[in-house]
Image (cartoon, rainbow, N blue to C red):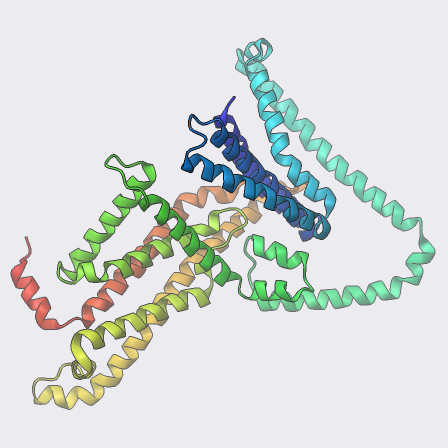
Length: 456
């Protein structure tokens, strides 16, 4: 086995935990789903820290500072997991927390068992004939199909018999239950009216549903998009630090990808703004593209959400570009030159006559830029999310006759489209921001640059 086996176990456990969390949170309670997710996260972090500690200890030079530093961090992390696990044990359902904790262990058992089965002679004899293998798969699917709905029917029958066994209590509480149902229906209707179309549940939403009466959970739900946006920014900072902290002459995959992306963005910005202004504005425009592209793609990660599908985040991005463009205009043209630009740069009698008309037109045009940037980005990303939700719902409906808690992944066929449109929307936002900056630069310099660099 070895470290590669543990890496595969972590990947399988992470995917299984995400799927199981969604199913449990939907069909049991959000708090149960949160407990399962926390247990799986605790166990995966524990395995990763143990691996780091063991690798550091058995390394050829365990006493050198790098290995000793990694071992120290791993030990501190393992010690911090103890109180974290105790806190989770008292604040989440113990059964589901244990199930999440056992998930990586079950993955280890099943992967080891599957390897033993796949390398056995019986499996080789079975798969030698495609007809026998197809028959075995069909039999397993039929058994799973009928066993799971039968379990659901048994559970519903047991709950119905339990309710029928206490008619006196049910009659005494009938009025209170009816009132509670009416209040719940009204609250649900109001919540649906306020929230509008529902997207895939994310991790913060599960936390909010698990602790609906906590003040901090309500604040977390209110600033959900901002939290995801900050988290994406933090991830990009960490990735950028890792990719650039130790550059090599022969770059690795991460450094190579980062350098290729920076080079392409740099050539693109310089190609529009010119060699005299491109390097100056490249950090801002390059960061805008990478940040928006990462936020667009963040929604396809299980239990996450695209911050750009929220209008407040996209308007903040558009407002940032608007303020920066006005700053560039005042800095490059001066106050008088900026006002001259807003008046339409009048140089003759006709220009001065039209100046009172051109000024409000330019002002409205500048004010419309953040609105157009934010609404375009929001509409496209929110539409992608709704498309994915619609086809995921269709996939569940296609298997509704089987009463299964899962459905066909119809939304998976749109992943290539999401990758394309996410990159396209980030590119459009960056192109328009670049053009807005270009329009604020001195026009005389544009003419000199065009004369110095004629079109080929």
